[in-house]
Length: 366
Image (tube, rainbow, N blue to C red):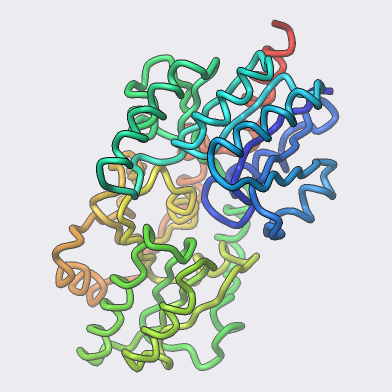
């Protein structure tokens, strides 16, 4: 059996982490096992499942990137069972790959999950250039969730394996056929436009913009309910703004949920006003479920898979978002056809898990 060591910050319900756990669920674990390096002592959302699936979690606590690299180097030298390291932390991959190189790890995978880095300033730009250089030099295999994510971290999409942020298409097909309404389970007196936003409660996801939309909708007497799904460091700030805008009867923070596909199936529209993204798995999910999404023009155009379900809007024109929401209608689509097309495009998690498993096994033979 091959044991692959994945390097993540924390296995919470975020985009890259959800993609990774989906792959782990579907890979043949008699042939390939996943273990995880994290950089926190806090329990991750997926930790219990990882342990139940036979994986191991090793937290490394460090004061800075250099200290982290040294501790990771020592760990890898002490754990000779790992000859494949798969890093998922974008620019920080540079230090993890360097640690793996110093520890004599033969196969070093750098995986890009984003098209941008949110930090700015001279020091941040210098670090970005340094990290991109090391990622290209030290990785023996480059993977990205899309072409723009490849271009960002590796300055090229050539010699980069594009591994789509795939989902369980069979599950989404079953959900679309069940017509189960999870919204009424959360709010029984539900009425009006049903809006949802799914994602970590952090600056990149731009929830303040969404709350400004909600405030304007209320001023216009639009009847709506807005579910915000996720957790993160800005939860208190978002909750305070909901109160400041007097939106307690319209906007609800649901935290982490295990029924997100059902909530998406019951929604009329999804918002994603992100400052930047890679190829968000939630947009694959929304298109599989037939949900219309209004998203920031900062997000890569490659997320639009041709179902006429994605509407790009500029963040400097909030009125355009409002007009779209005022005229939105629930779509009735042939979702079975959507599922077939997504499978053909390479968004079936079962097929992608087999491909990744074959990649790891080919490395074992080298």
